[in-house]
Length: 325
Image (cartoon, rainbow, N blue to C red; front, side):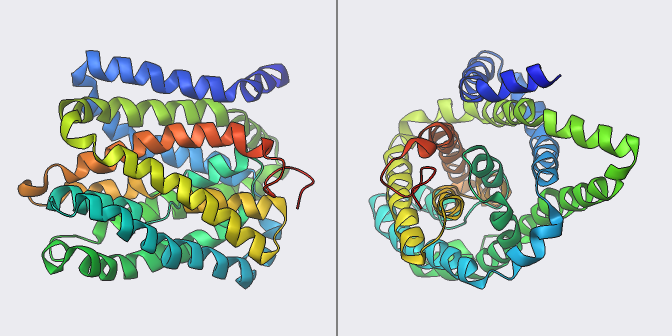
């Protein structure tokens, strides 16, 4: 079993790319797979986060929760600096209300789910992200209507429903977290140890499955509207590049160690697309392009995340490599 786990970990980036590639092919050639794949997204993501939370020693989480300095840095990065970047980039699609709504919805909200997985894979402080996730979720729920009103007008704000935020928080954070805590408490028993070991061993396969179901469920819709969506792809790439630099800058200014700097970088780059998608789907028919904008960002971001897992630990002079803090 140990050899299998080591093999998966050693080849994880290639396996993630392969999963995305296979999902693209299947999703485009078998359009009927989209609906069943979409129903699997939240359950699979919840399992992935459960396995991720198992790797966090909750006995140390109290000290992380009290790390107000790090939390302030995350709030600065995601709710002060990021909105400025988003406003500038969104002006390129301000002429189209559906494109504008999609871009704003997805880029204004920092990720609170699989960002912890990718951060952990790159050697970042995913425990700090876990401790900050309830605050990030609450703040984006409160500020999203404000930012939408400022950047898109009252018409967009009036049709956005907040319910999916609450549902996603319970299903993707609260329940997996509670299950992980209970599993750790039961780790003194033989059954508990088996469950914990099995879940930890399944991390890479679960990530592969998550990438596959997300891509397979949405790629056909994106492909059908690709001409209209091409304009937003450079915006999403530009956002990731800019936020990567800002994450490093905030980390350096805060004097954080390597793991914390990586956590800030990943938090700044990664957006809450899987939680935002139900909000976009609830928009009126006149904005039916907005959900596809959100999905396009997801596809672009997944490729960027896979690349960052490989590249971030190799940075030699950015404060993101081992021993350079």
